[in-house]
Length: 91
Image (tube, rainbow, N blue to C red; front, side, top):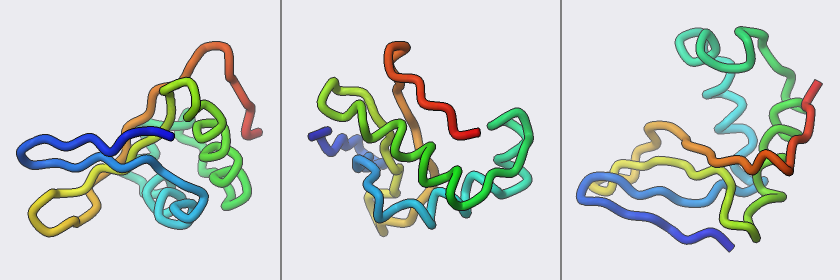
C-alpha cells in the first residue's frame, strides 16, 4: 500500500480503481492531453488499463498519486512513478 504524502499545501493520495473516471476526465482534457499519450485521446477502457498499470506496482513503492489542495481537498492533478520492469500497454 502506498503512503499518503503531505506538504504544507498539498496532499498526495494513492490512486485506486475508483478514481478511473476522474483520471479519464483529466487525461482527455486538451491542455493535458497535448503533453501525454502522444496527444492521442484514450477510451475509458484504456484509461482504466493505464490506471491498472500503475496500481499493479503499488507493492514496490511505485504508482500513481492524486494531488489535492490540503486546505479544501480540491483536485489539482496526478503524479506517477513507474518501474521500467512493469510496462503494460494500454493500446
